[in-house]
Every structure is written in C-alpha cells, then in structure tokens.
Length: 237
Image 1 (cartoon, rainbow, N blue to C red):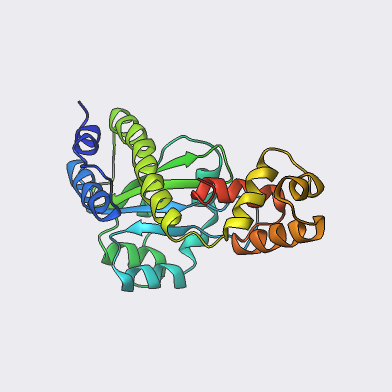
Image 2 (cartoon, rainbow, N blue to C red):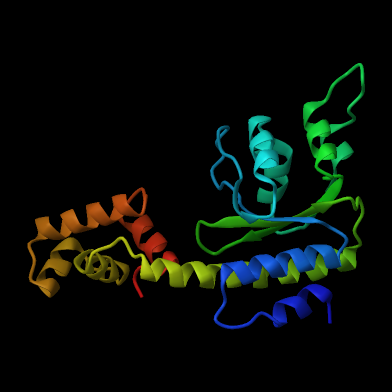
C-alpha cells in the first residue's frame, strides 16, 4: 500500500487535529519533504483573494514573510489550483526565478532560506463552496506521477478527517440558537418564512429575523447560502 494511505489508515479514532498534524508530517517525510500545509483556495475571481492556511508546520516568521511578499495571492499558483483537481508540482526557480547578487529576488530568497526548493499542491474541489489544497514542500524538486497519484488519493482522506474534526468541534461551539437552527432546518426543506412560522408557531416577521441573524452569524450572503454553510459546519445536526 502507498505510504500515505498506510499512515492514514493508522489514525486512531476519534480523530483529532493534533494527531492529523503528526500524520501529515510523517507523510511529508515519507515522500522526501519537510513541510506540509492545508490551504483554503479562494473561489471568487477577486484580485484581493488569497489562499489561507488552515493547518501547517510552517514557521510563523516564514509564514508572515510569505504573506508580506504577497505569495498567498500569487496568481499563477491560485489559477492552477482553481483550474481543476490536477496535482500541481513546482520548484522555486520555476515559480520565482533566480536570486542573483546583482538582481535580488525576495520570493526566491525567502523560499531558499526556508528550504522550500520544490513541492506539490494537491487541489480538492468540494461539492459545496469550499475549495482547498494539500501542499508539501522541501528540498526535493521532482516527484513521479505515481507518487502524485498516491498523495492525491490521500488528500481526499486528509480533508475528510479534517472536516470530521471541525464538524465535531463546530457542533460543540454552535453559535446558532435553537430557534435559528429550527428555522434553517426548515428552510433547508424548502419552506417559506410563512410556512416556517406556521410550523413553529411564530410570526413571519420573527422567522425572518431569526434567518437574518443566522445568516449574519455564519457570514453568508443570503438564506440559501446560510443553510449550505450551517449544514457543512455541522450546526444543523
């Protein structure tokens, strides 16, 4: 069995993020890398959109410098990851060129100083609005098609484990009130505010207030979006 899948198969239940982090480092090292990161990929074509780290073993100082140089917004990488589920292998010279004494190249210099000479991104495009990528980086600058396939399959499992961990955490720290949850659950079934009010013995105005508050709490753009986010986060279970 592929090393990545063997390592994942050993994860003890119930799953915890700290245990997943240790497994990610073990997987990285099994494939010749030293760094890992799970990132959120922006879904909107916004020039200000950037990738965000969900979990990683990047040093805080490196992460801050990486952000300062705008590398979380580096368009070629984001464009490649948003294009589809195909793994994206890279090396520092391919992305940023060389750091010459007479032509300083801050991005190339930063990556070299941290040992980020090459790596691979494995995008995961969910059925909801979430899109992410699993990334590995280190001294290695090449990777075979077979290894990328192994890591791509593992990436789906890794995102699944992370989602399960976050789902349980979210249920415990649910920001929605029982009434807000009830209204969203019924909205998920296609009920109108009037119908929800009849079922819950509430006025249509009160139902609308609950839905508006719930939409704001989950940072959604509308009621339908709020239902999708709340369900995905485990708030409606």
